[in-house]
Image 1 (cartoon, rainbow, N blue to C red):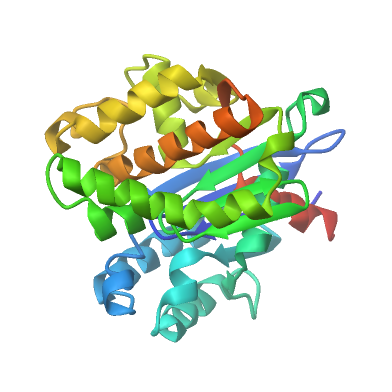
Image 2 (cartoon, helix red, strand yellow):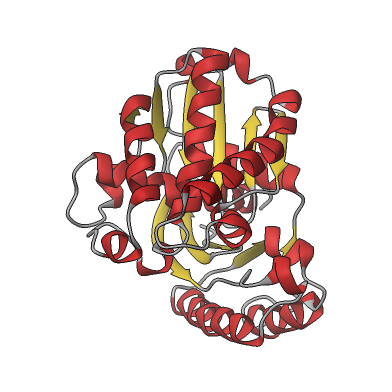
Length: 312
């Protein structure tokens, strides 16, 4: 049996999945973890990774490498997404990943993947446990620096995410009406090409992945603490989604930090994520008549791991 390790390093977080092949297909989780490292801190403004952001990421990845060694991982793949496509000093980042990943598989290094591949891997991971009769599915992966919209082979990666939007427009606590108006305009501009490229009108079910959407799901479920098992594949009326998005956007930082399901690293940026989510909900309702959101805890990590297993 081949045990695989998948690492996803995005703009806001780095995540690990160690998994075995499940009987009959799919995955059996061994370890699933996430650390907020904010690798994309200031990249839009400076064009460079901040030294402290690289160091936070190095510390988290070193822990993941040790976990993979402890659990006997035989194959590993690390993908790096939006922030690493934009940073001028990305060679420093990749040298760091090569040093650490090489302890498991000599020559291994983080890969920059395109928005198209990111979308395809997210789709593969997100819909694997859903009934195909509920399709066609539209999957959105709302990250720190980009949002992927994908239906089977049609995909688009929009340069908008919770960190990027927050740094671009949402500077007050809570954001002002003018900041929110500017942010909505920016979101609409960035998402418009996605709705031209992806035939969302044909979708029957919206599946959302990543931390903004799973946190919104947790809030709607009334959870006091984050519970992945209860959140995974939970269903939420779009009216509830819109209500929670409005609440998150209107809340102060202290109010968001006081929510039991809120990861500390998401407190400062989830207002931006809520704005993107609300825009997506509006479009899917208008274009496809979709009335609910299915939240999946399985996403690009699962797609990476499944790809590793299929290539053994």
